[in-house]
Length: 301
Image (cartoon, rainbow, N blue to C red):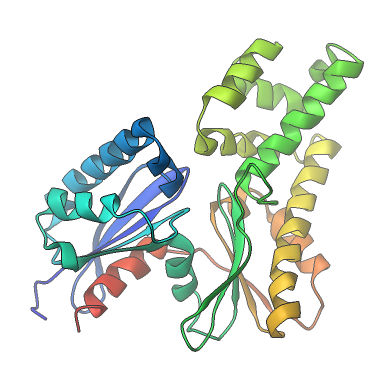
């Protein structure tokens, strides 16, 4: 490995895609971010175009900082079946196809938190999942089934719970939103207080944009008991998927990460309260794009 070799790491989520370049010593020499994307978008022509566009922007940013010799990308929703993202990255970055690996983003986030077998990662971004990589390298999960089905405690779930409450209240008492700090904040973000504005937002935006509504919910916690209840329930939802792995594979430390966790301290507090007292809970800021950059270079050894 040359002294000037650089590894490019990518952490692609529904809300944001982050990248980093690491040198041979593992130092991060540059990093940046572009819009969110998901492997689920690869199922449609419009989605593939959107992913290609995001990767094009990312490649331009990264190449302006340095030319990588290897790439490791973590892509949310990736199940190993989509080959195009790796092909596109090789073409856009001018590297050999064999130098590009694409993995599920949670695998990389796990390896940024624990060595295989060491603990469990509960990750809450737009969605949510609990993960364990055992000492044989096998990946085990709880949750992470997608926002349409569940993903309790993630940003999309928080936004959906808030919108459900707001519009059920409106069904019973039109105009009730005016008395709710959470409803006012959420509907202001949506762009209007009538159903048409909410309908266009919920059914016309991508899941990352909807997940960002959780910011308005979290900002209302101190003024609105409903918002507080949703945020606390998010923590309990995350505890549930962590405990699912504990019951299956035995007690181990749990790391809690992801951007949704940083919305409000109550999420981690409620999760801690829902876990057995003897089970260690570590809250950490995951830097999966940093870990992916180092993995990219190490994979060449």
